[in-house]
Image (cartoon, rainbow, N blue to C red; front, side, top):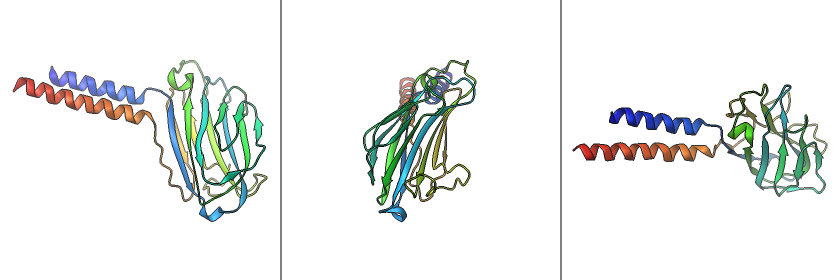
Length: 205
């Protein structure tokens, strides 16, 4: 019974860890090869071709380089660097484009949230996609530091129909590693299960 209870606790923890929830990814790029170059950055968050459940993304805590004034906002995009940028998937194309002078490093957090992540409806037929691109020219025509030669994307996060997220990192010289915020919750849960098992063993000694 004790082992069955522990197994149940571990499975519950795994379910919590996998349950759709707000998630944060940290992106950090070595931009030393572009230092001093005035290029541009692009962030977009768009629904799929069919019906997509509501979701939102924020770009937070950007450091490195300097943004020019007057970003170009399309669709449901608000904010301005180096402050918070917000985009949702409420229209077909939601985009933030910004001329940007690179420093030796660029880093920011990508925070995804909303019903599509926290409460998937099981009815939607398309997910949504966040994409980040870097360009070495101010017009945004020359992709930089990316292995994606087709679309020029540097970092992509797909919000899936079950509320999970899938990351594709095309960044060259990237120090980025996905850091989902819910991993912390999973760690706490598994630690609690281990402590519970230790207490159970002590009780039966």
